Length: 328
Image (cartoon, rainbow, N blue to C red; front, side, top):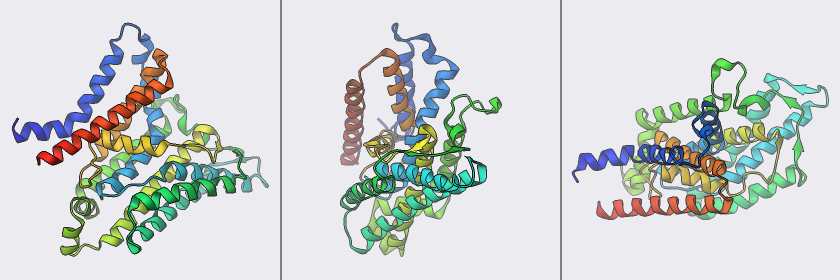
């Protein structure tokens, strides 16, 4: 197999896998015809939003050779922060409008971005591996979310964020949910950043060889802190979508979601060794997982079977990545 074919498979492999998975479900005799309906396709994209936006931030971290196991906890914390800020507005008003909803969202996103910066500082200044730091923060943040929410759901007043995850948007010409459009906008921004900016090229350089990046004069510590801060901001947006989906802040939400987020990046072609990954690949990886879950649910497949299938796909994706690196 020549190098051009290998490069094409590396680029289009996840997309081919998505088409194969969707085709298998679509042509199953027992699959309801509604699987291919426009409404279900919109549902699949909406179901991708929370994991997908978080995975975009994780793409930056994994390309740089890092990992963030606190993703699910950050999403839960953001939903609680948004709900608590809205509760403070409820003292004077019964419902929260667009402006105050936006302010509450910024509060949650800012909290997650700050957490990302703190983790980046600890990783770079104390030379602790990201796995350990983010594992510890996964517990710290989850505990903080439970403390902030008084260990219970935080009920928020009526607000302008609730329609974000509606599959049938208003106005109807949007076709997809508002959350899906936000996801696609962030996807486009990350694509531009990784492909056409110095920050993107530097992220790849750090993940490919941190020592070489240092020799080239790159301020690796500053970039790594910025990368974790940006990942936190993306996770904050995921937290806002989680809040919109539930309609309240939940300190126990998104447990284990960090694994789905990492899986979306890996299935989409990202390498846990660093230096590889793309925004479009992550988008396709998140869609593959959403199609699998949606198709299995419509067939009535038990949840534990879905977990086995997705887990197997993750192992295969990582194994293929390792084989590719060994051959190269």
